[in-house]
Length: 156
Image (cartoon, rainbow, N blue to C red; front, side, top):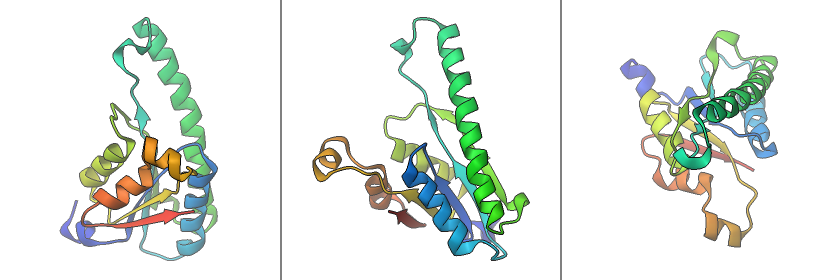
């Protein structure tokens, strides 16, 4: 990655899941920046590896991962088409769905940001109550708290 890319907020990482909040985050970027030249967007969904003892056999785990990946790839392509439909150049809109062990999804998203050096992270705000957020934590809150050297957009 070039030094110019490392310093630019024009390289955007949208971290998504299957929620309506993720769709709103993608739509927000589409509405805000669609048709504006110079932006590159990666839509990311980290596939969390289940604990080793979650599946009885490796075959069972492989089947689960294959089904999950097919479902996520369809969603990522749908999100990609939202951005392209809004005016993003297709060659500057990519999708990623790496499989990783994630003790914290926020940590995995930040690790991806660090590996690829995006200038902006976009996430949807999780629809948690204050009590749920206290008990389970919020991915968006953790990203805002721990992200360094980048801009974070949290879309409601």
